[in-house]
Image 1 (cartoon, rainbow, N blue to C red):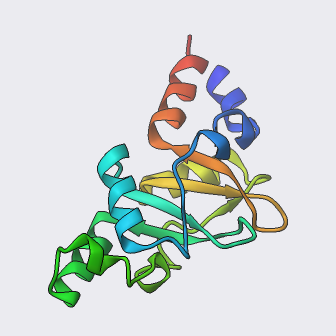
Image 2: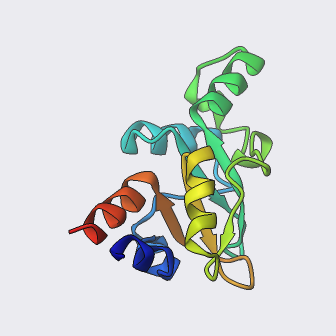
Length: 141
């Protein structure tokens, strides 16, 4: 019975708000992106445009492929490239803040995290598998 209550939950209750989320901007340099990745130890990071709209995500693999393609690990050289150059717009598609809980669960099975956007496509936050599992576990108590 309690699990049914979770299925009717608002996504905003379990998402990590944008202000608590690590993001990159598409105009950030590859060097900045690598530094953020090294600092936060995440495998994927949401990317925003100048208006704070969610435009896609980048992964460790995207940065690695870029380094191989450019043939250099020199950080000064990586300042010539931007995150926009390696951005994957189809990776980790976003869901609306109004998405049903079962849709969020389904997306979290396929994605590292689920970006949550408002009607303007502005990032509101993300839902991680950890936050999702924690909420389901808490509902069973």
